[in-house]
Amino acid sequence: MTKVSDGCCEEWKCDCVCELYGDPHYTSFGGIDFDFLENCTYVLVEELNPVYNLTIAVDNFYCRPRGSCVKGIILKYKMNTATLYIFETANGEKTVEVSFNSVTIQPPFEKDGLRFESTEKKVFIHLPEIRSFISLTPYNTLAVSLAMEFFLNKIQGQCGECGAARSCVRKGGPTTSPSPRTAPICSNKLCDLLNHQVFSECRKNVSLSVIKKNCEFDGCGNKNASCSALEKAAEDCKKKGFCIDWRNFTDGICETTCEEGLVYEECRNTNDDYCFSGEHCQFCIGSRGELRLPGEKWANESCCYICVERTCTYQGKTYKVGDQWKDSNYPCMSLSCTLEGVKTNKTVCPVQNCLDEDKVWDDQKCCFTCTSRKSQCSPKMTNITTTVDSCTAVIEVPVCKGQCYSQPSTNSTMKSGILEVHQVCKCCETLDSEKRTMELSCQDNSKKTINYEYVKTCDCKICKK
Image (tube, one colour):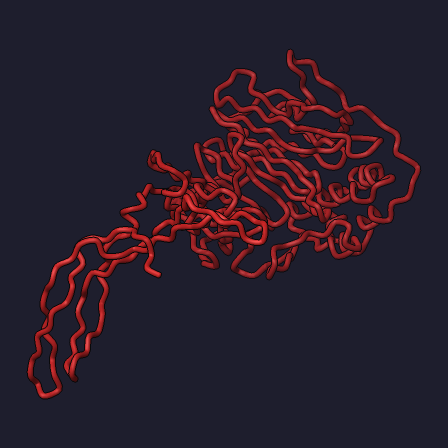
């Protein structure tokens, strides 16, 4: 049961919860435990008569020779599709990657009635309109929680019926009974952790015997496969009010890594990130849906969290929302970090048609403009200081500046048995000018007038020797 508040009154409502862990072990909506060791995509939940177009499927893979594990979840809701998939990085760390309508996103993210949230060890997809959610951890632990007021006796699939004791319900209605299996004969010290003192208080209130058998089966030949069962045990204890700090006892096998500068704590209970009974709660979004600033804290009657800064990753670098950058491999493309992820913008260059030697490129080497050779050599206004007989003035006058191109001459000579083609060098020089006067200020406060040449046009001429 879950306590639900509408902002005025609180009431208890029932949830249908289905869980998968290990390779994989099912706990159906009806609380029945069974195993299903196949490599395919299977429907966990679908509506008998579609109202919300809700379908939840699990994608399994053979994680070891003896059985399969959860690889990902496929959620279809209304007109959207979201996925959670487990990937292993080059250094062996497992992460859960999130996509929305085939576009990779980074939680927190919300759109079209789906809200994506994540902690360091679990990713959630919430469906607030129907008070339901799914979650997945890097250690192959999956949970589906549906509100009974929306789905009572209205669904079928491998998670069974919501509100009924029946287990796996196939299309057409037949029930599949749990299939027994023989526990393997092998030793797995990691599973002995469930008998450790750290679980002692929980064991008095929660039966862990089935989880221990499943843990031993999963870990036979692969210790890492037992982490999902241990996660399941810790979650069951947490629901009863017992938070177990168990990962430190696994010799790093089930360790959870954090981003640089952060430390993972299983049972942190300070006021800035604690929820009653350790249950997951909303964070990073205020009561009116506004995003909170990084590091900002707020509180209400139930819980409070520290908001995690939204970032984007591109080619191994991390960017903040609002950052813009360029990729030298793509000079005509600019990139920016948004709340939805990395956004690309392509520069559209104006159509130009000229010789390569007349192209003038911009600083990004993306677009060019055409400049004729003559226009490159032209009068440019320049400030000069003129002094005549202790009289001085600073004036702005046009000076011929610009680039001129050399040309091959029709003459050539033989030198040391090698033919040399002569180059005709051209310089930017005055083509037309006129005389003007300027006034200089003298040290005795008098004025002196002189004539100077005012350049009107320039041209490329053969350089004077």
